[in-house]
Amino acid sequence: MILYKNKLLPEHEVPVSYQDRGYNFGDGVYEVFRIYQGVLYGKQAHFRRLERSAAEIRLQLPYPIEEIDHKLEELVRLEQVSDGTLYMQITRGVAPRAHVFPLSAEPVLMAFCTKVERPLKLIHEGITAITLPDIRWLRCDIKSLNLLPNVMAKQQAAEQGAGEAIMHRDGIVTECSASNIMIVKNGVIYTHPINHLILPGITRAVVLKLASESSTPIREEAFSLEDLFAADEVFVTGTTMEVTPVVKVNQRIIGNGAVGPVTQRLQAAFERTIGR
Ligand code: PDD
Image 1: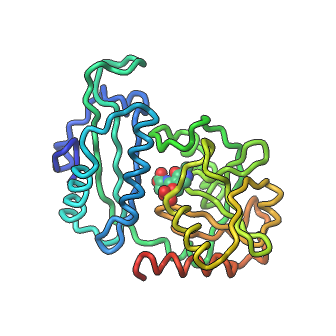
Image 2: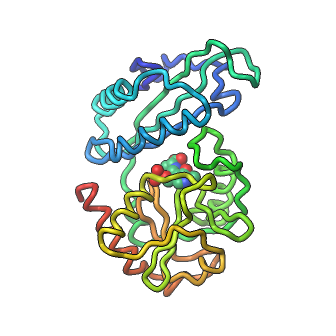
């Protein structure tokens, strides 16, 4: 079933319009939630971020968050997804194509669930990554539907046999195509501060909280490509990737090439938060 506006519909009955501004302009915002054992993980944090993204693009949510919450729970229950994801987007609605905001369009919410297993092999063995210039706009803090640079980056990574693309602005690492990035050097975790250049990841926040609970020093400071290559450990965080180690970047081995102790500790702590 698909949640369309506030109705649960079979897929073939979803009346997506050719004039939906999400479709024409990428004019909308989205969230990806993780479902663990039938429960939406970090739900309130995702709702807060959704509200913020919508406010930043001056999009009024079509329903109160409590009603959206209720509908998403119904969707998850109906779909009987144990481990998976829930994708939700809200567009500015349907109107004749014109850049200026329509006067009376009703924002369109759409959501669906997908069964997805945890990427355990990648979590245990790590991934390789490539680096690319971050060519995105200057409001990467908004979870907007405009993902073309992210799509291009991930595609380039995939074509080179890599699992993620690490992006940088003039040699300063920001984040990845679909995840945040952290490095460990001499026991200290470094990650880009929350500002307009990165998405404030929900998993990033969980991991930083877990790190501080275990007294691991954290510096929310920008780091360079040189710092990245010289790091003892590198890992990415995200709703679908959880805490995934990066063991090689541009064919260069990170640390000793194995998943490092700080990463392993955080992975174990993260697993406890999802009841594993
Ligand atoms: N992506 N940075 C970017 C650019 C992202 O697209 C994502 C998530 C993250 C991690 O955020 P979080 O921990 O809240 O998932 C960071 C989602 C999963 C996606 O677009 O599929």
